[in-house]
Image (cartoon, rainbow, N blue to C red; front, top):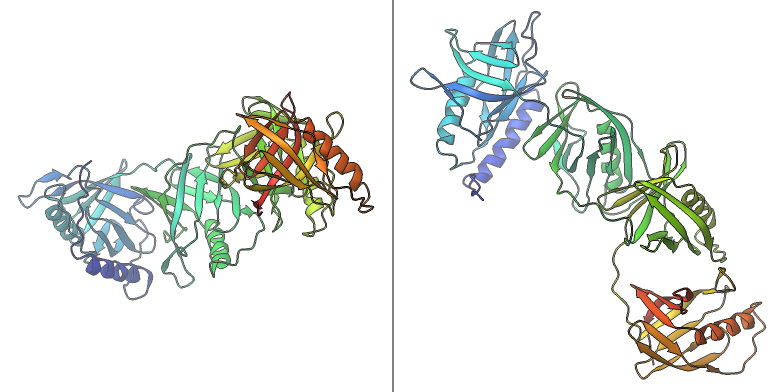
Length: 525
């Protein structure tokens, strides 16, 4: 890899001067030019790339390869661009074909490569400041001096493709017109899909909007977003509102290297992005997904209720399982390309009062899941849609938890098998636990009584001997003794086990889950 041609010489001075350049462009301190009737057509709103310039010996010589010298004439009477090493800015006045450019102001970095770049930069800025006329023909721009001689030639840069690209916001224009960096600790992203949909994170909420492209013209429709509220860092919601409002004001774009600039109809840059490092698409199967938002009708998308976690996992064996927010659920799924269908859904039967609305959310979620017809994965995001193409459920990859050990973990029962395929959640107000000790004994609470039994493990197989227990009788809650009897009976039917992060399933001989636990913490003697 070639070394970076830019050194840190005069970086502080350069950064300060860049601020001055920006201030000159956006304030009345520099007089903006105007264009008279009959002005050169096609000069503004285009990124021009330097092709050749007039050397000291009076001949046109080609620009150094890879130097990236550019010019962009805005409708506000300013011209900005890269001189090869440094960024520059100047005012210009266009009257018919007569063009005048004020002495450019530039940053003060030093670049050692390619050889001759600093000499070329000095010559370019000198010639730009000597402009007296211009003409645009066949996507070429020629700038002439007072004698009519061509001193600079440019070619029109073709708009870079946006579809399929992803970006991370670096800065956005504030209320005072000055560019401000994004808040530390926040990440704002933009992914332009090939289907004409722009999506990403606005910092707190995820958003989506339709966009259209024509040459360098870009139109973004008002965005819809999820409805979460984030308190930290301070100002994140104000930044999010500002960002989404600016998106709707975008009319043009340009790509310079690894940076994307979105501008308004006056050519003022509103948003500056840096190219995001692409994330490979995660596989649908075997990935733990957590719900980030869900459709509530029309174009409305709701975030998940605070304090609830909704998950889904598509296993390679065709089973789909997860937590719907209150109850655990399961079912079958089938895949055919991007087509996905979920069937035979079942769930435990708990009722959760808190947080408010959790049961309504669960019902909406399971209803959507049963109506899924297709899916798509975008990096670490999963979107499930219905047969009309309407997006119903939005997931992100779940944070990976450390694998809990069988022994030394206190496991709390969440659900257990009934006859047939039925599954029941644990009765509200009861707690059933299991603690597997390294000495081959398992102990815990069966809901009313304490129990104990011997167990043996070999690989993923497990056997549990007949359990002994205390002999108390509990009259409440209703059904607790029947649940306890079923639990102790299922323990004796265990033939294997599996642990997935903080979940333990005890299995029968066919691999069916008889008892499902969640890690509650380290077992305390």
